[in-house]
Length: 228
Image (tube, rainbow, N blue to C red; front, side, top):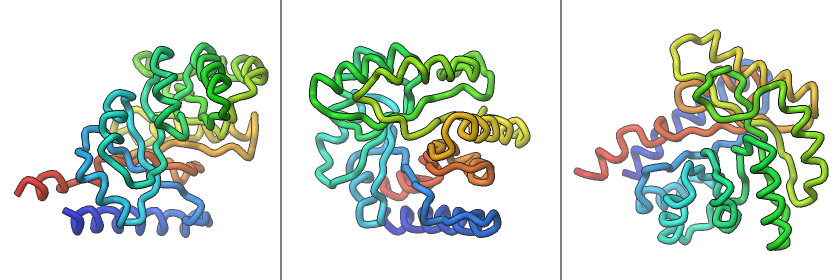
C-alpha cells in the first residue's frame, strides 16, 4: 500500500515540478492538499511518512470520525460545502475552510470564531463555471460580500477557491481558472488560488493555482492493493 501511495505521489509531484518549470513558477510554493474523503484512517496515516502535511475533507461528520482515529499532526482543510449548523464542529477540527460560499456562512464562522477566541483562515468559493448546480458566490456578488466581510474581525481571507466543470472541454475548464486568476488581480494580488483537482490540476497550475486539491490520483490502485 505504502509503495503504491509513494509511486502516485512521486508521479504527481514530478508532474507539478515539470509544469512549474515550463511556466517559470517555483514548484516549492505549490501546496498539495490530499483529499481523503472516503479513504480509511489506516490508509490516511501512511501519508505522514510520505511528506504529506495537508489533508482535505468534504464532510464535517466524516472528518470528525476519521480524525478521532488519526493522531498524526496533519493540517486539515474543509473543502466541501459547509452548512452553518456545522460551523462549530468545523472550527474544532479544520485549520482552513476553502468553501465560504455566502455572506451568511462567513458571518457564522466569524461569530463562532469570536466565541472561541481564534481567527479562521478562509477562501471565498466562487462559481466561475456558471453551473447552476454548483455552490459558490456568483462573480458579480464577490465585491459586495468582500465589503461586508470587512467587519468580520475573526476571519482572515487567504484567497479564492473554485471548482472547474467535470468535462473533457479543456477550454471551458481553463476559462474557469482564468476567471479566478483575473479576480485575484482585481481584488488582491497577494491572495492564493485554491483550484485544480485530479483531472484538471495541470490546467489550474498553468492559470496560477497555488493550492491543488488532489484525491483520486493519489489513491489510484491503493485500496485495491490494501485489500489483497
